[in-house]
Image (cartoon, rainbow, N blue to C red; front, side, top):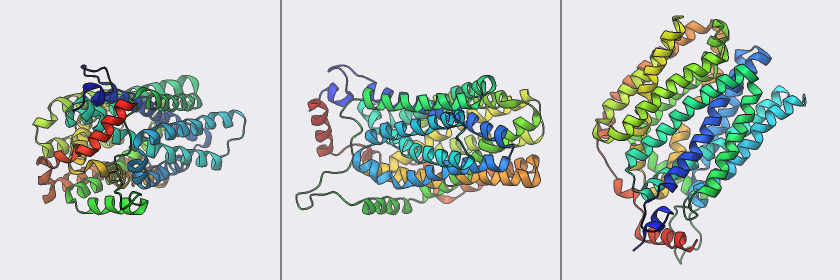
Length: 445
């Protein structure tokens, strides 16, 4: 039998939200920095090169290593533990991000060197984001928080980071320039590393692999663990359908965030402050949607919630920009889109965690995320080339149509009926020997 201290890392006899609170705090500071960079980096490239194509190329060079490295580090996260991966990769991201304004100030930042630095940032950020996601179910279990609520809160954190980060990023870029925004981003990564390293209970975030048997002194090899995750995912039609749909919508989201909105802001004369304002309005509405989802999502029909959320979050943003509407109307549409988007991630996150055994969560989450994010590197690259070739408005109309068709056609597939059926909650619970091992380690430390 264990006491409350071993469960939560807090004072015996008292419930503590230290594990979940610590993970969410690290997520909010690192994600806030990333959202600041969403404004600062494209604007820096646009004002220094004047090229939508080069702006898309920078986004491609950041997100390609993000997706690839994240996919292949899933088994390592399961093997060495998400805590160590999180704080070390956040520190690496901080160093690489800080190098951009420093080298520019020294007049040493060529465009190829910028591409190399953003590739390094992406390669470090992917495993760091994955590690924090993997720690959420463990933190929720330790704090006895329902899974839907924990994933809903992580969705709130993501939306809150978008609200604060984009607003701060737009203001910083407008007042002090894009390089100041990148410096603040580096500071956020450093703070996230410190929180994970120092604030979480010492028994938390260790490897979830089963202990090796006497007949086999070492655990399964890297490629075997990777193959197990791939085999499991291949046998889950619902998860595969969701991943493919998200892969296409993420490509379109990357196109609008990294190229289409910055180009619209420059051509309309609205400037970087409008980018931050649009993002913060959408993020604030998404926070409201995520909070509501965290409270009531487990009582609603998941299929209806997800498809309605995508209907509101997708096509309207592209269409309102294409019709040259006033800023007030644009902000209203982005607010409605944000509210709908706030309901999506908590439900999809709960479905993923319910259907994947805890010991495989890192590798399956990594593969699923990487496949779902596979289109993101291409989003900015293709959007930049398309805008250069045919102009902004035709690209916005095409993207809005593609978003609408993708989400609605995917939701009609037969495997989506399973999304309303809860399955596999017991796999989230640690096996008795795993629980005993973690409890004893927590008490010992």
